[in-house]
Image 1: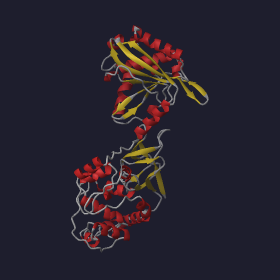
Image 2 (image 1 turned 90 degrees about the vertical axis):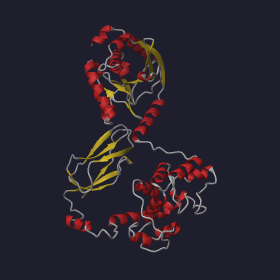
Image 3 (image 1 turned 90 degrees about the horizontal axis):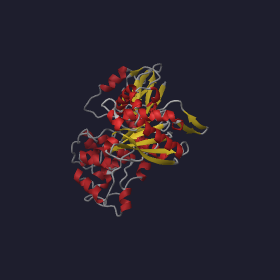
Image 4 (image 1 turned 60 degrees about the horizontal axis):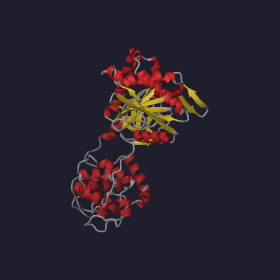
Length: 463
């Protein structure tokens, strides 16, 4: 019996996941609890385990590919089920003569499926070249933009071709060989001899439309040209038949027609967009002020960084002002007993808001250790969804970049966030962005006053 493993939903906001790496391959025996893959959600990289014993039958998603939550990513043949082929049969298949090109039943079925989808794909095909000696020139901007998109099968072929070696050249032009009708028609258009190419082992037997395209694209486009076609989602059909096309020619076409490079949104970027969109919908206001930096700087060290002291400082202020420990739900306000703060931390373009929980119950040493550990998690992309839960207030510190003052956007369900700027004339700027539904102006001003007093309180720094 087959057991499907699907892309899990690792957070409430996760809509799709990215397959980072496979830890198994088809044919491997796995047991309950074995890690079979690593996937990236909108917030972290997590391990995917199997809950059944068996043999890995199929890996349905490529490494680096993103698929919606619930999509089948692997199939496990449970231990009780009979194998589809014996080891002896598999060995016999592997011993077939090397000189004779063969196609597995699985590949033939896959290609038959592509042939069935042919009419749909053909509707998306771009205009034929005006002649075989010149590059297509779209008549207007809209036409040029519509020519950018490739069909799904062409895109898949380009993905396969990158990194492959160039095939042997064939000078034959007659039509023959074992191939589907669509493959024959396309070979005629390209001036290719199917029979000769099959004898040269440049085409499989039987040959299908995708095989013809794959051979032609490798033969008449350089590797760098193919990479550009993939990156800019350009169809190879835009360029003259029977002529070798280089990277330079593709770049000239891109510049001439002002074709933009599409950069797909990864799960992390989608999560950031969703978070800031949600934050923008909150009724917020700002309080601009500054705290004395003298004692903070005096107690700063490689271990006790400014961020460590800021976490401690804000946690203490939150314990004195309970509204900063509130969140808003459909049933009303929720007042949380401890001070838990989300802290903005970046890794390249990825932005994380890991939560430092119950800071009011921790010493400066414990906070320093926790911050060091979280920095390593962020650096290696190992922040988990659980690391991002449980805060009521946030901090974003850009002071180390030289930014004097900025506004930050509230994270998730937090009541507010503090944007920390750089030190200027002995003062560190603090901008509070507060959710007016939870904290009013007077409460915000009182909180700011407490922060200023704590920053000048010597006893606080002895804690």
